[in-house]
Amino acid sequence: MRNPLKLRKNKSFDYSPRYYKGEGNPYKIEHKLDKFRSTAHTNRGLKNKFSSAMDDLKMEGDKNLKLRLLIIVGILVLLFLFIIDFDLSIFLNP
Image (cartoon, rainbow, N blue to C red; front, side):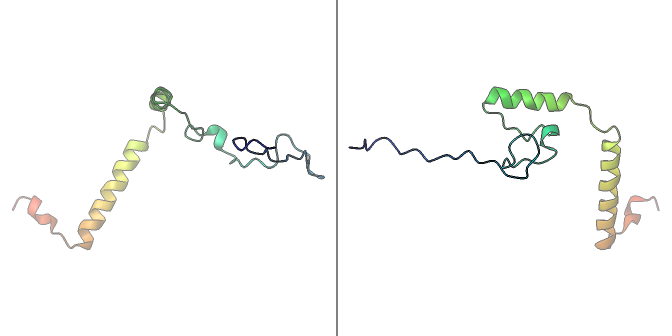
């Protein structure tokens, strides 16, 4: 008689593709750049998440990022003001 509390295990087959000549599992779905991303591998627990966030802060990024961001935001603001037909002459001295 079977035990009603234990589940039956699934059958597993040791299949390898005929023409696969690579290393690792060919069925594992992984992006090419996952090994370079810090957010691709999930860390469980509050301490691990905090330490990974601190490591991301310590990594130095692009030096011109802030300047590029300010230029893009400035262009978008001026474009928005042009679209709504805002008069910039109120900021100039008469």
